[in-house]
Image (cartoon, rainbow, N blue to C red; front, side):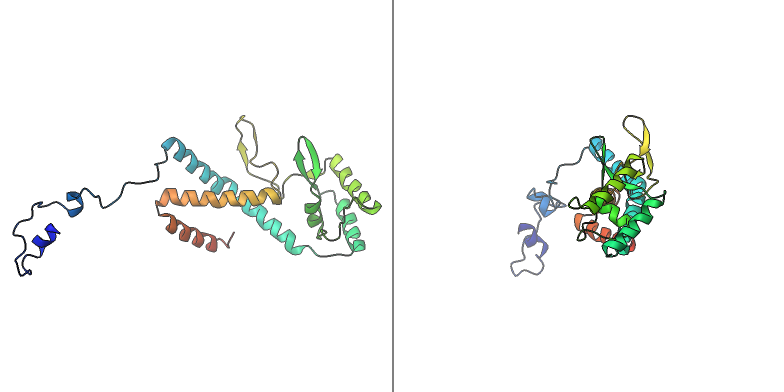
Length: 227
């Protein structure tokens, strides 16, 4: 108020104050109230921040192409799957088994390969959740399961939706694919991780505020076909 009385001295009836008690000093400085408040979020230490940014870039640059390729393939399998009669499904399954290039999708659990039955039906070309094509409740279903398990025993298996995953150097210095079992359930987790990596990377390099990052990521997703 005192500084304002000096500032408007020429227009006040009482002429205001002829002298500013704090010349060349801002009001905020006079009352010890900085314009920019102190940050309430602790600063991330460099030894944490730099590895985080490098990991985010690895997901975007190294793993991202595989994740998006697998996502495209999984969506295509779901779109192309058709409801079939049991007889038509049997015919398609027989033809699928006869092709040596086809491989049974398996989960790797405690050193044992377990067939991913739902994914197998999509690879064959039909959707069988209502049909129970590989059911254990009847002889036909058990026979189909035995056929698939025979292929597993012969080594005709796949652990991921797609082949040719990018190879990386693992912590034990061995080389191999960056992911061991990139199937639908794992793919959902990796899509979320990729989205988080994009957010971290945009925030790190742009220094934008949280709300601005959200708008930027929305534009990125739109331009990439909402992948």
